[in-house]
Length: 127
Length: 229
Image (cartoon, rainbow over all chains, first blue to last red; front, side):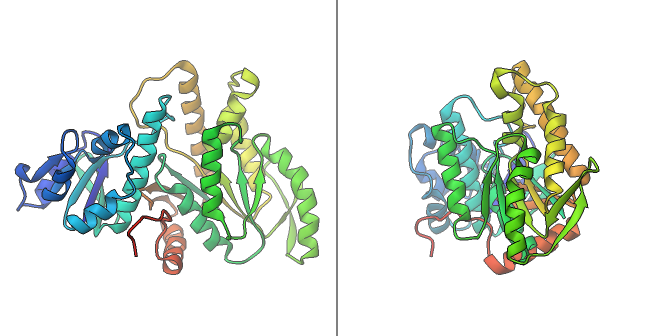
């Protein structure tokens, strides 16, 4: 499993597609709209933070996601915005989203074979 | 040694800071956890409980001081310094940044966190204190002078691109000021991203501490996931 994080509009998806020439946009599931099955059937999950957002709105248990991904789709590439670098949100649901997203990404980073952060289109290798 | 650990919310910075505190301390002197959070709401209680669990069984002496940290520490440690004397820990005299003579032992402290302390000082008694940033930086550095090794947890609230009200902006500005001030004095500064450090300052020293921690504990992420062997 590979994990790529960074602020919004940093060219994360393009970076991933550039280094994985064998993949194209048809391999990408979009976290904004994708279903649970798409997580296991696609090679890339983009906007992973949006997927987490939709899950927190339905108060679902998120702690099972890393295991589900690692066992069901072990070569998956996950791309997520970093959303934690701000003031504590006034809306409790936003706050839960921020916390859950951060903790899920910590666990994914721990399990990842490759973990990078993208800034201005450049990848900084962390693991 | 002074280490600043910063990062976004839920980035794993607490667990990371705690891990390196243990490594730096390495069994020498006492190990303090200096918590600034007030236990005044359900959310705070939950957070405090989660952090308590993380520290469980690791031999931290917990001090809870929500404001005026240096002055409160002087009162608190006057008592513990005597205890340390009895247990035979090495002590020496030193001066803090204001030149005042103070005692300190060969102790290590983990302070958590800058943003919480700043909120406590800035919005105390319903008044907004404009000079809170300067005050907090000074009290933190004074407090740091009581210990040989200090790990301070800061936070990154600077890049969500949102617009905020006047007071929140003042808070963000003050937090930036305090983070910069500590960073200037620090031997090493790490930004934690998804539980992994990016060393912004003192990379060689930082990596040395981090590798030692990883060798011993294997990983810095302590959240237990179901299904994990």
